[in-house]
Amino acid sequence: MKPFVSLFVSLVFICLSSFAQAPASAPQSHFNTSVDLVKHGKFSLAASVLEKEVQVPILTGVERGRVCALLAYTYKQQGRFDLAEKAFNHALRLMEKAGDLSNDYAATLDLYASMLMTTGELDTAAKALGEATHVYERLENHRGLSQIHTHNAELLIERHKYKQAEKRLAEARAEALLANASFTALSEIDATTGWLAIATGRYSDGVAAYSAALEKCRGELGEGNAITGWSYLLLGKAQRLNHNVLEAKSDMQKGLAILKMTEGTNSLRYLAGELAYSELLERAGSHAEAARINSDANTTIRNMGSSHCAQCTVSVWGLRHQGGL
Image (cartoon, rainbow, N blue to C red; front, top):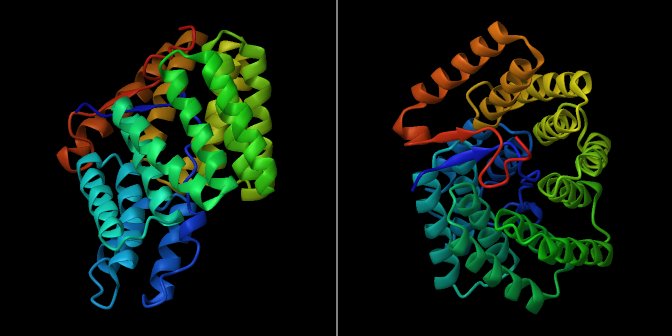
């Protein structure tokens, strides 16, 4: 397995709707603190809390599974893919053993699929999304189905199946309307729509879609949220492809500043953003600054070591969707 991180993906929203409340027998302050830390991009701190929480003896199997799922997500966001794989599998086994094929189980499958897409295991990701779809359909969970359709669209974009991806996005919007989804849920659909537009060479449409996603994030999450920071970077990439260099530079700077404040300079998203920004500077003629930023980011990646990103390649523009570069 050769992990990589792509800048040009959707917002990769965490499926926290099923994890919004702490398990009944767990210390609520600890679990809820972890959820809040994850929402704000404090993945290292969240992991340290959850690693202790998962050992609490009074947890039921289902409750421990939910804690494991959130812990797996924090590992994934840090690039600790081997640990994330083990934690996701443990979470799913605990839930299956308890016969609890609920919203929690489907959300865990969805989170697991997002990691598999990050690491390039697309067939396994498709199976996980298919299983999650069946659970959400049985439970008539329209919000969950909206997320699954969006993530299936991402998978189809990876496979250059653009017409099918467009259909899935339409289904995602329809389910979101039935669920009366929040702005942040709708912004993920907007972001994936932007990715599809860029992948098919419609750069102006991509800018419009990513702008819509950013505005929804700013309105609901605020300016100082990690997802808002990532949204700025996505928009900056689209603007660069649409030859709006000044706007691209400004938005990438904003995105990096937010990610530095929230996730820190060792997060893979921040490093992917720095590499993207260095590419923009290089193309704008700022060769020395571009080289410095690129060198610093790659040095940090190498220094992460096996515990964070074994054999990790941070790809600025992404898997097979090169975005016209």
